[in-house]
Amino acid sequence: MKKLIVPFLFLICSVLLQAQIPSANHVVIVVEENQSYSAVIGSSSMPYLNSLAAQNGLATEYFANAHPSIGNYFMLTAGQLVTNNDSLSSTVNVDNIVRHLLTAGKTWKSYAESLPSVGYTGGDRYPYARHHNPFSFFSDVVNSNVQKLNLVPFTQFAADLASGQLPDYSFVIPNLNHDDHDCPTGPTGCTVAQKLATADAWLKTNIGPLLTNPEFEQSGMLIIVFDEALTSDTTHGGGHVAAVVVGPKVKKGFRSAALYQHQNVLRTTLDALGVKSYPGSAATAADMPDLFGAAAAPSGCAAATAGVTVCSPTAGSTDGSPVHFVAAAASLHPITAMRIYIDNLSKFTTNAASLNTSLAVSSGTHSVIVQAWDSSGAVFKSPLTIHVP
Image (cartoon, rainbow, N blue to C red; front, side):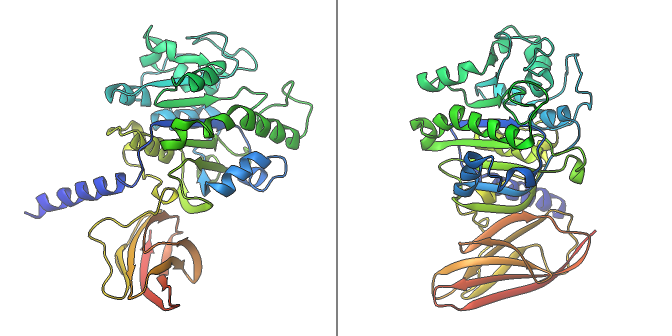
């Protein structure tokens, strides 16, 4: 009987966690290049992107998967690195997002700025860089006269948006002069601040109209993410980068402290579109639920009459990082906030009566306190100890 119960409970938990990602009629991914989190967030050279981060959701502990670029683009679309060769020219036959979108009856396009022509699967044509366009490698696209038509120049994006023809899933690739990689007029000859300012202006001009589109305002999702940090930063493989999530169902002014990488974006976008299968590591990756709505605890995790109940992790347990925290609070008065302290340091806060988030925790034994406040000022605490291998 136990052998049957464990998988059944796992299935229930998986469904409940997936349900926390709100549905989206359009998901748009915009990928920027080669700038570290510290260079982007708070930079006076990127006022538009920083305004989006301040008003919407910002993943403050987001890390790329590898250096150089190409592996990160494949992770965003196939859930695996595939190669570290930016000069790759061969067709790639791996499971990828196109297969899962088509199986689910969803539409897609890759909008690549400076792409020479619709359906182009050839090499670089500066400032277009093929290794920034993973869809141009997938056998599902290269070997299909129909799917190749979804490789389009970025000029098509504005036309599709205006005519109501935006697909369910859009992958947007600015060219090398506009994605923070190169200078505005060539590979070199400018400062980092000029690269940032040019990319920021491009986002405001070209992506700004998406945010005021009536369909997007109803249930769209935009994720602007950097492919990798500077090569000197190899933390978690590709370094600390910025990831900004925008949309009507995104928590406003929220900063996530959960550890996320490109496979988490892949999983989240597919769940938002109602796709029930996932390529590569997206199949086991966590969603990014804390960035949306009021991330509620799964049903079955409820607090007692008054106090804090921690459903995950359990006291004394051994948990791999990131550690999944699920808790709920109750009182005679409305709960106004909950917070997670790890070793007496505040790591996560939400203005809700429940929480459901994953946090990066270093190896070792840690003291955890999940605390809640109600509208009367009363404080409730639930302490526990966990071990991270």
